[in-house]
Image (cartoon, rainbow, N blue to C red; front, side, top):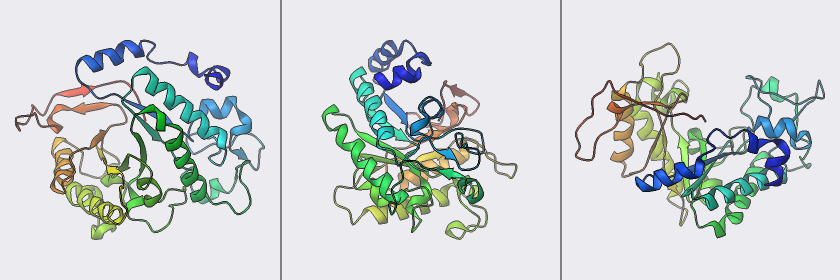
Length: 296
């Protein structure tokens, strides 16, 4: 791919034996998903400055609170590049392409005040940009034959606006094959769904959030499958720590609503076997862990 070669992305490969790994996954009947990051791509932002968000004060690249540069989500070229990456992944043998960071930055207002989006046209909203480009991704991958899926904020199922990042529930579920709302209890504000401390209510919060998601999807014919991301990590000092019990409570909430597909997320890619049930319904030993490299 020309753009990947220009920016050196093809030299930053973590798994140079990707094709061999795909063969191994296929031999063990493991479903292979290629995750493609769209807007939060520091390498692309730094090597393709014309595609990047600029800082109004310094004139340099704008950066978020952890010093990452972002590309301009108004820019068509950014999304075309993501589509090309996804097409290549499908050709390699991945069974699904999953787009992440399909949005504008979620930074405090004072930091966003310094951000300039060079490709922005007067009157065009963030929601319009995201909606149009989600449709572009789906259209460009029609011939690939693989499902096109999107990671989105869990709050999109409850919010009336676009959360300041351009994401609206209906804009995704009316186009995607699968949406993956990140319904982590720790990410809900105090008082959400009537719970003073949502992080301490893994079953109730996930069930409440998914109930709203299902309700919003119901009027839309052919709406996307919902496959929620669930919290397999502990955030903050306040209890509870997320042990296999809290993780299984989230899974129970999903399955009680008739949803059979879900994904666990841990930023270190370390998962406790006790969080999962075996096919015969028995509980694995709680102390065991599964570790894999990667990040999100």
